[in-house]
Length: 342
Image (cartoon, rainbow, N blue to C red; front, side, top):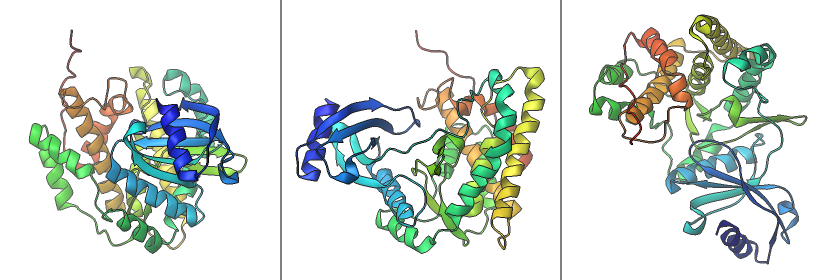
């Protein structure tokens, strides 16, 4: 039982008996880690607050995530400080315990369906600038300190798994993914201007309150050019997973294109003296879309279960196909989704 095992692990770490003031309650979050909120009594003062248990299915990736989160927190970047980490099969594997961040996401209750369209104007006023300021602050951190922590946890700066997923899709069935993989080889940007990259910077990984912004989820953190984060976030904004009736789709795409372009412009304004490489930005944006579409293709063939019919990648698939074609000239084809068994 999670409650008993978590209390055992905490007592062993803290060297004292503890009890729950509030037992673990699952939190909604990403598609990879499992997250619980809880609070204890009997621990040291630093632990006398709402806490979060994050359990990650891959110990190697977890070590890198924890190392980067600790390093950027030590440098003063706004992210929850990791109090304790370990690996225990009783709670599901690699885990970390951290202070629970306060606030709400910048979208603050905006749903991603048609009803959300009426709330978009308020979001437009703040979202690009908020994301740009967070990215600029992160990219201004001392790269060497984070790189040392990342490498110490087994990470390889510059290595990114998105290409692997695209190559796997090409090997399963071409459908344009083989041509896309060659395009990445032929147009690869220089990787020397590295910054601390989050790799998953989007509104649902930010919490905002009166004290400012807190950044969550460092699973995809790396040391890469700034255009890596910019391409990811701009691509997500441009191909936002918003389901809209066909007549409204052109309007939605104009709005999301404005969001993406505004984000990049505001980032450039926040980093005077830094120059954007448009080719690198296009390369990294295409990489993100290609990776998402490769996962959609894999799920539709029944080879994985990560991307279900309601997953954001599915909702955005048509927009991403069109964007990849515009960026690379390559037309990808997705297989039909398999009907549920039975």
